[in-house]
Image (cartoon, rainbow, N blue to C red):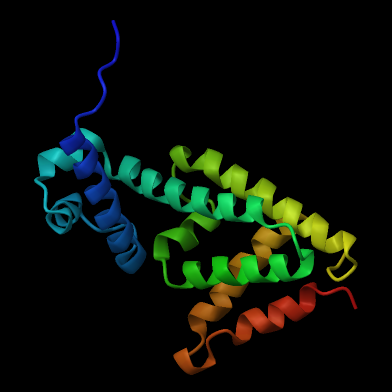
Length: 180
């Protein structure tokens, strides 16, 4: 028995659901009700449940897509290892600072569907780290595991700073990553 291709309206509805969920989860965290997401997407609750039987499956799909985009970007960086490394970390932290679910995902608290993109992102981050270390500008004793913990710590700092001080925590953390 062959599997039938999804109808175009079903694909559009899925895309609308993912976009609405991505915005809602980023703004309000994982506690947003599925009925709210259905309303934001302009579809009925049944349509959401047909595509995503549980809120966890929708949350995982949103996070997997976001982590996948970051992994793809990190994999494509190559010209200036140090600049790429810091620019990528700054972009990741900036997006996570304004995205509650991405911050949770970086802490490893999102479902299994996001595992593969998270691992891909970790591998790409490790490649960026190693290239920057080979250039001699980043501490040679850092591991990608250390970097994950440092990013989460920097996000915690950033979330506690007032808006006029935004970015200060990252600047301080980035200075500590340099090979003096």
